[in-house]
Length: 404
Image 1 (cartoon, rainbow, N blue to C red):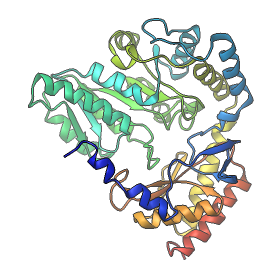
Image 2 (tube, helix red, strand yellow; image 1 turned 30 degrees about the vertical axis):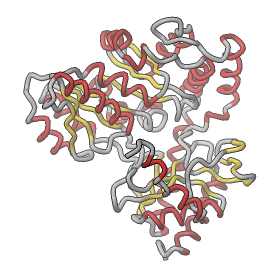
Image 3 (cartoon, rainbow, N blue to C red; image 1 turned 45 degrees about the vertical axis):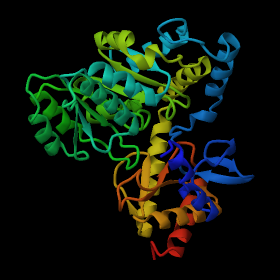
């Protein structure tokens, strides 16, 4: 069998395109935040993770432009060698202070951040205890850690997974591990697909009992929940009980890159041992400058968080009131559960034709029965945008018999 046979036999995407309901890789020609232009049409965007609407904020755009003029378009090296700018150092200090931790380390992408942390800290003989619904970046980091353990001992099992957000099951799994073995519990703070918030208080209790450290991925939490948008630990008042928090710049911070905050000794170790940092070009000047400016806005315009959550709550209540199955979690992600792949794709097409863009999540991205239209909201959505989304959802839901 040739390596490329599976590529030639892959027809699902082309088949879906032929039906006119292919929901991926649609090029955005212009964007003003809540409204974008796709295929020459104005579309209300209800699928972006641009939670505070800062990708088009004048201060953020101007900061990126000034950085290009001062530093050029790239760093042409890793942070370890020639790729560290004073901008990187400034942003790390600002984020550490904002998150209430001793230090911070930037990575080139949010996806790389988990790969920089998990396999660097979790060596053979240590364990990762991971939620089954964690983001793919955590799964990738787990696989690298597991592979390193298997290289030393083919029978080793470095990664232990527990049922989604089920802390009783997590304790059952962690109790089977050697008591004196180092352990890292890893979880999304706000789960990217469902918008569900992790049961952090119960997690902290288990971690204390079994002497485990905690890493929370707050990609969808920072700028959304917690005091001043400081994320999951702040949401629960457990800032001192979470050892490390990682995040991304591609959502609230309107840019590209990732970071982790924690104790200075841990950050220093990662800085000198993480291959994902040492062997990757550093974040570009414009990306870092944009994130710095976004942090300025986050700190000085707290009304954005309040408006974001008001918008999300309005949409959750409105969709639920129509009869849709909607998650109850108080975050900016509002998934509409349809439970059927074909219906999700056809409804996506009708929503798009009606002037609304959402994300279609189907298997294997979600478990069977949870196929969904994932919607997410921004602080820059106005009632005219939200009412349009609700109106189109009402028409489409009735058309396909999902609501009456």
